[in-house]
Image 1 (cartoon, rainbow, N blue to C red):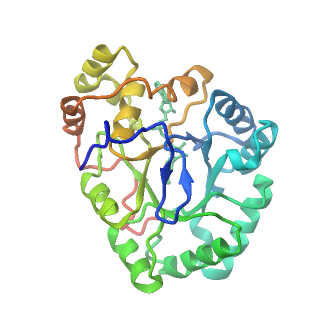
Image 2 (image 1 turned 90 degrees about the vertical axis):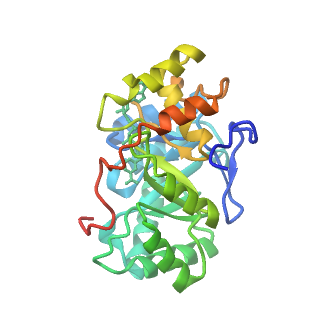
Length: 284
Ligand code: NAD
């Protein structure tokens, strides 16, 4: 089953393959500076977001951590995720990088920690993931995931370590809908998380007729239609905005459902082409 609307309450969290329960929608923080993150993450948490996505590479873990602390929420009520940068592949480096992330974030654990890229040229992603699994055993992270992994990288992890990562966060939006990878993940119990969900680098997605028709039919905004499309495909989605109104708008996606026809029209926007780097290219 490709579309899960009607079967699942999409406002309820998703259970990952390791039993960890994760919100389906979160606040993304790429290109949000440290000071800005302090403000926008606090806004997002006030508005009801309970998942925050950061990364060592974004340079804003300190601001994100302060926002979580200032929010007044219990640490257990916020699902905090970060990612290990490619310079820190390798068993020992990974452990040190995780400890640095925890220090910057001002917390004793992450809910989900991911390898940001497989960096296949380094050839160290399996032992790096092994370090994450051990950190999980010790309680430093609750769930071990990856980002930008291709099936061949996931297969290698599984062959050597006997586990599938809980989450694979990948470029995914209607112009690059990753139907094949989503199905492949689903067969193996890996949760798909969409980065660049609003089409990131192109302004045209929100003006596509397939999107605009659904906007008119449901009296929602184009961003809400696209975010809903992700949720109905079973993906966790982490849109980013620096503006409070848009941060609120992007969360108001649980009072309507796209029809199968509307989903199919948006699916048909797929170009099969990434906007970002090909994880197999060795560029990262
Ligand atoms: P996005 O698709 O969330 O797009 C963000 C842009 O969309 C914003 O800059 C804003 O201009 C616009 N936007 C947001 N809300 C809107 C609204 N309601 N109406 C109109 N326009 C709106 O792109 P992103 O930030 O690149 O991706 C989301 C998150 O995914 C990031 O912040 C980051 O946390 C994560 N990410 C991960 C990777 C990775 O390699 N793992 C790469 C890129 C992003």
